[in-house]
Length: 439
Image (cartoon, rainbow, N blue to C red; front, side):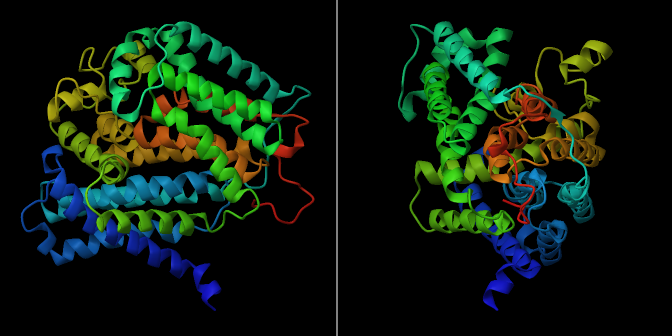
């Protein structure tokens, strides 16, 4: 009976509510208590407005009605969108946003509709596959590009490669920033980090070919020594952990497992003394997305929207972008923080508020929904755990950048191009003769 409850929709609602409650409490105790200077404010008497508190929790949980286990890779991506972006946005609107109760509820409703739309993307296109049959071993090409990228980064940053400690990463980044500013290094480096390293690492594990994984590991180390990017260094280890943990398991309960895991970390950090880990977890992982979204909303309520001219190729056609040479991140950073701050933000902030104001919430959600349909169509037939391993950088990108940046510099275009070739490397695909096609 307990197992049946654990696998039921009711359990999803329960842990969604508990996660929301923990964020609500953590915002007041940690974000507002320790990072008020960053903008984690609380409007006067807001927590005493029982009606608005109730509505906020309701909107936080409502999109879970549309979750139904694991169907396609978008099912997994939406877990992180919901936990790390959507719930923080709903409660940050409640705590921070100025305005009437009706204005706040209207904004929360639009986000609720957008998140619900993303949850149902996995229900479309299940009956058809889209791939290009080929005799090409695309993974050998990826391995070659991993080697080529590693050699290029090593040569480009020669004489400046340092394996620095956590405390010195910003010193190393500042020292090597100019070396990676040219367009070739910027794009090739991004694709090495977000595409070639994850695919090489995952393919090496699933095919039991150590050369691929070791090549990815070496590439991530060289990349870290060049740019001090901690996330890139962690990718092979995250992928290895996911592979070991999930390779023989169904992903149907992934939402429950991840939510419970994050909730336990929240409880632990709420009951321990301040540490670098708790600061990074609450401010950078949980709080930053919600706060930046509200700041983008506040700014573009009173300034011209971009109508997507913040995207380079659109601005090249329209010449409309109203903020000169300042990127959106620099624009918001200089407005709310300092001239040196680059406040890059998620797709709801950039492709939503910045592009079209409040209406942009639904427009950005629709764009990502369509994108999910394409991703699901191309990735259908691959093993779910293999997909989630190689999509780790993409998930991080969507949480922190415009959809268009995620598509190009985030590497989505190359991920899909590589996956569209269905080669003879059958260990990457579901056994179609098996009844268990959910990983």
